[in-house]
Length: 201
Image (cartoon, rainbow, N blue to C red):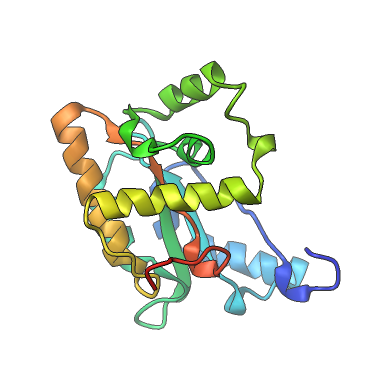
């Protein structure tokens, strides 16, 4: 929490498993929200909620489930049918893609099938890529990398209904997997928080 700002509280919670199906277990998620409210006085109803997962084929193999969650978890604050807010954020193939996108130009030209390959890439380039070197400028850089990807493949950015953007990226990445057995390296950024602005909006 930022000192003196009650609205800057951040809670990071692990799901029951690393499998994306955890984001579909409403009873388990409700227990997490209840704990945040009762034990930490966390204002869940007014929070932006994100579900961060890898598209690593070793941990998340059900593409139909993923497509369904993309359609279901489309807005960080409010979803249809009075469902609690929550936006699905995928990294291709793993969260390490975000770390790389803070430092590497045209990250989309990198390809990998599994998250382990991304870890190897980071280790080999540790002098340049390091989580503890990420600054404000790097975060902006990563946002620009995501926008470059969207522009390159003609994908519109819709922050009010991210499922349309998310779904188009998913289709593009699945096509890449079919064609080359690899994903184009990409990690979506939390642009809807207003920390970074889309220059096209």
